[in-house]
Amino acid sequence: MKLTAFLGLAFAGFIAQVAAATTDDALLKRELLESFAYRTTTEFCLVIRNSGDKAATARLNELLGKAQSMSQELAPQWPQLEKQWAETAQFVQDNQEAANQGDVVNLLAKLQIRQTELYESFNAGRPQAVVSDREKQNLLVLLDSLERMLATYLTFQTTLFGGHSVTEVSIEDQARRFDEALSALTNTALKDDISRKWGFVKETLLAYNERSAVFIVDRTGRTIRDLIEGELGAGQLAAE
Image 1 (tube, rainbow, N blue to C red):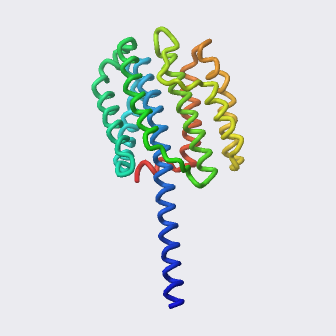
Image 2: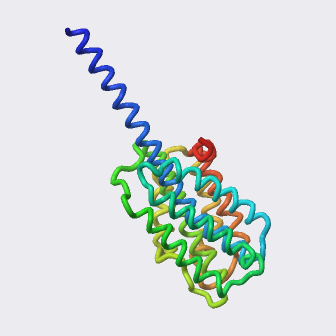
Image 3: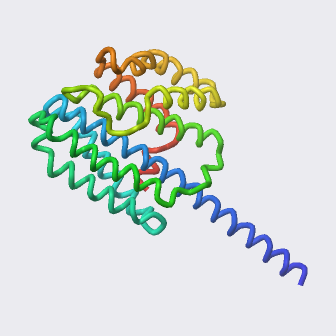
C-alpha cells in the first residue's frame, strides 16, 4: 500500500509538472501572439508609407501566417483570438492594393478600427498568471513594450496629419516599462547588446512628434526584436 501510495503521489506530481509546463507554454505563446498584433500594425504602416514596401510586405505575410497558426493552437482556451486574427488577415488581403498605392487617408482610419478590435480581444479572458520563468517574463515585457512603441511611432509618422495613433498607449510610458524590464535581465551579455541598441534609438522614439526617423527606428527596432525573440526561441515556438 505504501509503495502504491508513493507511486500514486509521484505520478500526480509528474502530471502537475506537465500541466504547469503546458500552462507556461500557452502563456508564452499568448503573449508572443499579442506582440504580433502590434507588429502587424507596424509592418502594414511601412507598406502604406512606402507605397508597397516589398520587404515589409514579405515580413507581414510571414507574420500573419505564424499568427493564424498560433491563434488556432490557442483557440481551445481563447477562441476570440483566432476569430480576430482571421479578420485582420482578411483586412490586410482586402486592402493590399490600396496600401501599395499609399492610400494613407482612407486606410489608417480603417486600420485603427480593425487593430483596436484585435488588441481588445487579448483583454478578454486575460490570464492573471504570467510565465513562471522570470527572465522569460522580462523578455516578454521588453518585446511587448517595444512592439507597442514601434506601432505607435510608425502610425504617427505615416499619417499625413500627425498624431493619429492606433493605440492610447504613450511611448513615454512604454519606454519606462522597457527600461525597468531591461534592468531586471540577468543575462548580462544580452542585456548589454539590447542596451546599446536601445540607447541608440530611445531618444528618437521619444521625439516622435518633433522629427521623423522611420528608417532608423524600423531597422534598430527589428534588431532589438531579433535579439529578444532569439533568446525566447520565438521562431521555434511559432513553428510548433
